[in-house]
Image (cartoon, rainbow, N blue to C red; front, side):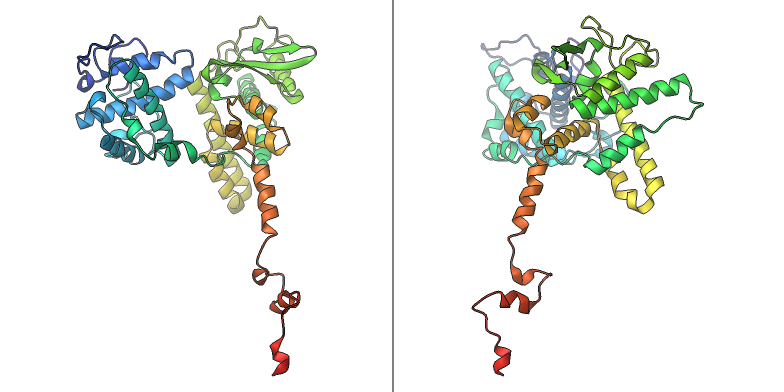
Length: 402
């Protein structure tokens, strides 16, 4: 049974251990689950972060319950076992399952074993949780601080972003999304078609996180001195304004016309940008996630049907893609189009330049091309051994002396 929403009762009897008997206790909690819930409450202003952190804390608490351990009892050797567990949750039937509502009896904390990158992210989040619990007096020490290779493993192995759609695949997908409907299509089908077109255009042009897309309001698009901007409160509760390209403004106008709204939004408009069939209610994060995933699946089927064997590999990529791939695709393509790093960082709403630099695939390609010109001539398939050696003034053809 999962961790509850904030302010709900704790979730598992096995974890209802009594509060530490220490005079330095600084929070009102009766057990581990309540202490963790108080930590989560610090992130109430950022729903996406709250959900992500709850998921990782929940996995740890459930695993500790299976081991008969409490947060206070965790030692360095336990973390090693827990990290292994994240990569292979066993028994699988107990821990892994398809997405289901959290109250469903067959809900499971994992959809699949975690990749190395996901395991690193989990440990980083839990390290922060333990640091907070130490300050709160709930635990006496942070076992993550005993991981000697933690900084090397968790911080410095930052590969470039690979989860994005390369330009030819994106261009095919965008053309597929824009294929016109049958003239007999219903109003409901038109709504879905136009909304999907807006979602993918919005995702590609402004690089929003899925929580930012779901939370977007009409009034978040505003004009200043003749220029249009999109205003959003992103990760960490930071307010940002992003330039709106002309094509995004066109998509917005078309969508508003379909909804029988005035051409341009006003700052007072609080209606949702992405709306359900009734034209009023907004889409939630989970509904938007499923909609995008289903679009990727349908596009993959279409690609295979049209291109046969040649389209299989690209279809596999589309089926693997998640909504966050659209954000990676947007930032990567902006970098390839020559957007300067300082502006790219602001468009992506990253706090650090080195985070954005991971999207500079164009620079990596040029680097690779230039480095490829530095090779061993003897291995060049374009030149014969005689050609290669005769270019060397010190080479002597000994065969003429035989």
